[in-house]
Amino acid sequence: MEDLNPNKKYITWQTLFLMALCTVIGIDDIMYNFQNQGMTVIFSWIVMLIFYVIPYSLMVGQLGSVFNKEGGGLSSWVRGTDGEFLGYFTAWTYWAASIPYAVDSGNEIIVDLGWALTGSEKFQDKISNAQFALMTFVIFIIFIVVEHHFSHSMEVLSTIGGGMMVIMIIMLVGLGFIGLIKSGGQMATQPINMQTFMPKFDWHYFSTIAMLIYAMNGSELVAPYVTKMKKPQFDFPKAMVALAVTTGFLTILGSFSLGIYFNAYHIPNDLKMNGAYYVFDMIGQQYGIGKGLLYFWAWTSVFFNCALLAVLLDAMTRMLISDTGDRYMPKFLRKKDKNGLPVNGYILTVALSSFIMILGIFLPDMNDIFNWLLNLNGIVSPGVTCWIFYSFMRIRKNPDKFPSQYVFIKNNKLAWGVGLFLLVVTAVATIMGITPQDVAQGSATWWYELIINIVAVIVLIGLGAILPGIRKREEQYGIAFDKRQWIIMIVLILAAITFGVYLGGTKIALRGLYIAIEGIIALLIVWAVGHRKPGLVNTKD
Image (cartoon, rainbow, N blue to C red; front, side, top):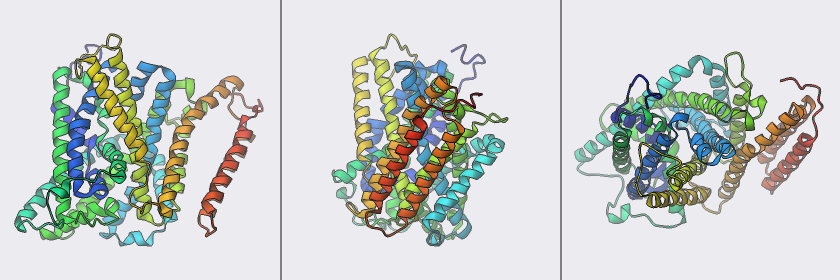
């Protein structure tokens, strides 16, 4: 501790609690899950808080304490327990999970700007899916170009935006309940009884658990700060319990407040995309301030999502390139410009983000794209969370090898069992979350979303398994591919994507099958070209 914190500038548990709160919960998280489950989500929040959030957060604290000299990052935990390759693959999956999140943030900026400039959702009807994807792509390019000029200010802005998010939730709860009293207890959700809050334990319910996990994970981001606390064995649990209690207050009362303004038995299909605007518009009208709250929320969300996207594009790419080192990451991806930015890493990020956007472009409308991306986030994010429980089980299996100043549950066997329980729950929720939400089960759109969910996961995770092979070619030949190979492979991939977009826009029967066939053929040709020995002309670094 003396070496890690020589100036003895400790942070209090209250500070750590506020930092964690901004990374864990936001008003959109409440909105998304309310549309999935209605008022029964209140039951789900309570169960999740007791049996998931508290133990999850305390496990993160011990992992951060064990691996404090490595900064407490997720990949360093796995690397410390299982070696370099699994540490690399963890870093890759963590980064890959940020791709749908970044695309979703880009989409939200477009939605936020539309509301902020027009005060209405009608602009969404004027935007085609292709325009929506193109505008999101332009947002990406803008942020890539200006990132190195505004990265620090964006991080500060994200903290402010996170704090404003919490304030807006408190306003939603406070003004909602005051309005309920003023109206004599009149709620949009009727009837209100015990059955209103008890879920029906069917496939749909269990397939939405992943979105709850997605909404409540993220406390691992504050793990490195465990070592900066004066008495982490006492102060960290205080911060995490305070986090759980506050999260419970915000989610439970926030969900109930939504039931005041929306009929939980007939929820609008665009609630995930526009619900926050609808509710602040209704509250503003109720209190006689017109659209004031709506515009305040719109601009808060604009700045928050802009900052979030900037940090995601920069921090996640830098973390991947620097954290995985030169053993598994190809040299061309680690190449930096004069400003120290991993340019090719950014290109890879934008390329995969574009791939995700293209997958969703064939969905019926803008709202379907928005909902599908959230569904995809609810798959990949909980999937990555599994690494946390796996690492915790590993350190509790060998407590002498992994000593910790802070320990969650002193009995190692019991602690290991709790880790296994959360690992199984998260893994099952991730798998069940692959089934689409918000569309009629068995419909053409449902099947299409199911297919692209699987394709997106395979591509995002599979590429991480390919990169070490490319790095091996660099070590063997000096370069992974020669110029001619690069040109052929890039042209083939772009042509396959363009042709796939064309087929998706036609009315040809079985076009989905044709897209899959042409995609497989293109990949086989790319593999054949890339498998050949490169011409050893450009062997310089």
